[in-house]
Image (cartoon, rainbow, N blue to C red; front, top):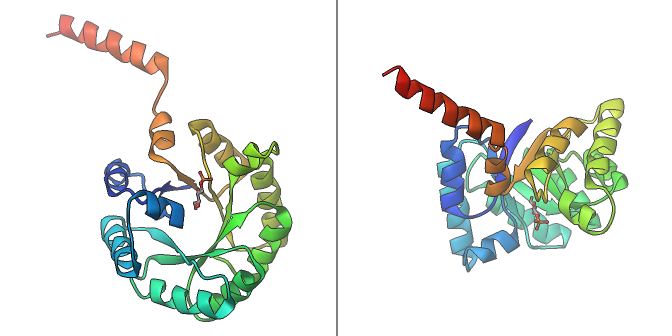
Length: 217
Ligand code: E4P
């Protein structure tokens, strides 16, 4: 399973990248706004900086909702760097645009996915990645991990090539469960990635080894 970081914060991207396990970055308009990135030029520049920091796929989201606008915006985003993946919402014109991007050699990430039916449509259109929003599904009293498992089954049975990119991750255990359920990629906030390191027995064991090591010096 690939690891992406889900943020537009450059310090966090740097920290995750330095761990040596980072395969890419996802952003969305809310994450960009959180970093105070304002205006088209600044947004483009921010994506360029991220592409220069991380050697992997970088999702950049369109804000247009009509076919023509999505295509024009996506072309501009894709021109920033070869690693840019154009993030397109799961709406009618979005599906149409994903097909257009596929036919024109531009990779896509279909976002705001909450059902298996949407996952089938995105795969049929030729999306490179599919982003089911696990945490938001859990928030609505359904099970986000069940959707990952269902889509993984459908894609495997049907031979769809679209990669399942589990998004809206809220905890380290979400990452483990997504891996178990068959996600190809997990995009995670930094604390959820770092949380995977934690186990009290590791801390206790290390403290004991370091204490005993003193006796050997
Ligand atoms: C990333 O691709 C998604 O936009 C993001 O994971 C959404 O996360 P949230 O539900 O925590 O806002």
